[in-house]
Image (cartoon, rainbow, N blue to C red; front, side, top):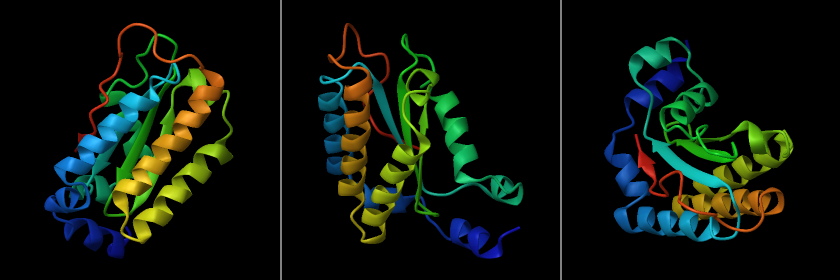
Length: 165
């Protein structure tokens, strides 16, 4: 068990998400996702969580494992072309994880996803949460534009609205 991590999560209040992402910022993130999906055939979801619960921390749940749970719960895997991408932020750890469905995962190398995560985390260290997310959406969109060009065809399969857990 990592005691500093446990303490950091236990002392991370839920209102921290609202301070880092006020309603106007969440609306701009939603607009950025919607706008990006006009340029590619992929689906992007953004989820932010203030901290993990005590049971998850005692189990040693990593941010990556939690991101996989959220990916499943939000059904990002359930798109027609298997090209959904989740950008997950665990605020207490300031850790970003990108989970891509099999249709895009096989086309983009892990280094590209990692570079996007590290760029976002750099902005978060400077306290610039909204711009960090917007830059991440831009980078993910660029990858989706390359591999799934042409913009959204038909209905939007996944909501563009950010998820606050």
